[in-house]
Amino acid sequence: MKKLFVLLALLGTTAMATEKTIYDFTLNSIEGQPTPLSSFKGKIVLLVNVASRCGYTPQYAALESIYEKYKGRGFVIVGIPANNFGGQEPGSNQEIKTFCTAKYHVTFPMMAKVSVKGSDITPLYQFLTDKTAHPDTGGEIGWNFTKFLVGPDGKVLARFDSKGGTRFDGSNFGNREGASGQ
Image 1 (cartoon, rainbow, N blue to C red):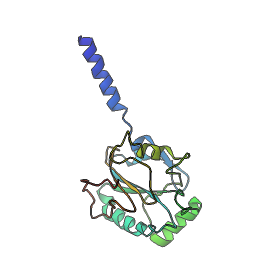
Image 2: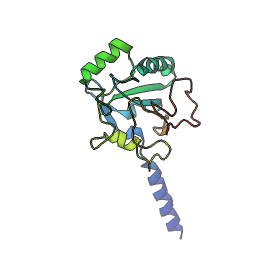
Image 3: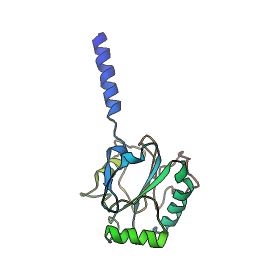
Image 4: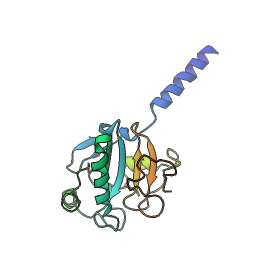
């Protein structure tokens, strides 16, 4: 009986040790360099699927403002371009980078363009949208500028939708109650 308890305890420890977080994923930076999300370990991370030709594109200005205000306090925004909604991010990575820098003075990390839904969805977004793994924040991405707030441990804390639902505008930074926009 004692061996059974030890075995169950070991299995439970192993299961907890293998729980996935965003730190298990690597994206390419907008410059094409592999960027392990584990490089953000210990920080609060806001993952945002972005687009340059969307009605929500002006959110870049607010995101940059929030990033500048909180980056010294362990907060980082990661912009992840996607062309899944109305073809609103048709440019190359270099064109996206130039646009974001010139028009919105973006300094937060930007990743290479990926797919956030559909048959070619990137593994990170498969994980983020998995309703089994994330019953409160999972579900298909509805549009550009959907945001996932991730804790220092790499676990998803909240989701903020770009249209309808809850929006992340900085005034609710740190307030996770009722933060899911779903």
